[in-house]
Length: 139
Image (tube, rainbow, N blue to C red; front, side, top):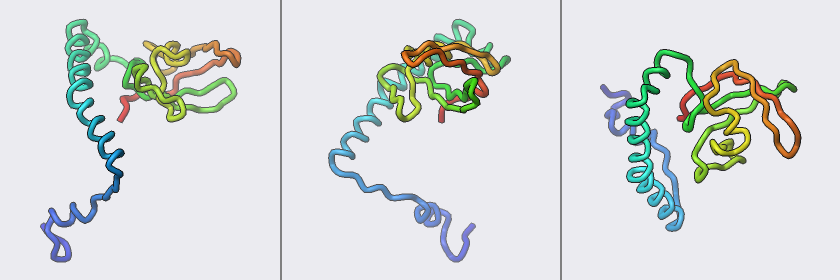
């Protein structure tokens, strides 16, 4: 079907955003894509295989989600502030972007908890109490 004489293919093409990269930026993106296609894809496939063997996949489908690597978690502190953390492997961590390691203080405290659970995290700045508001897979 076409609108205004444009084919669907040309409509889709006109809606695509064009990004301009430097040669260095393109090389980094290409390297990241290759890493995701080779290393990360295998890690995820191994994780899914292991989870199926251990029965973890079945539990997640039947029950509420659990905080694990690859999950996005909304928490509320006792003061009422709301934060979102994305739980990742250590090498992917970028706290300024909300990507926290499963080995970081907050990440480690959140692991294996469910919505509604309360946790306490001891940091150099003191103890912070959080209540988990929601858990969902990262997009």
